[in-house]
Image: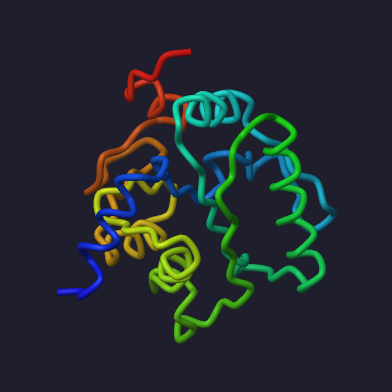
Length: 179
């Protein structure tokens, strides 16, 4: 048992609610985006869902992984992070932080399914991930969430061992948040 668990539980009672999101295919349409030339296309219904979460006292933590099939240069990767953050903030979405991993080696503690990015959020914001929703289209991301006792939620169709929804906006609708 983590000796700081009780302290973290008390801190979390006084904080806003947190939700973790891996943005590709949940917020960013990966099919119509070309990250290699700096073109990101956001899913408008997902942005509307995030705005609704922000209005209802949720803070968003974004987790961004490097692309294993074709890595971005460090400069391009950092530029993409800045673009994501800028776009969301300009749309009225409250972002607690963006945590990213530029590596692809499975031995790196920050590459999913390793939970390093979650531990980094805990270090910075004293977040207890127990039962916090974490949303992704990737099983590796959700395995990392599971390792920190978060509540993995899969976006997309088809069978899943986790709760799943067709889209981020479908998940937000299920939460019954008021406009």
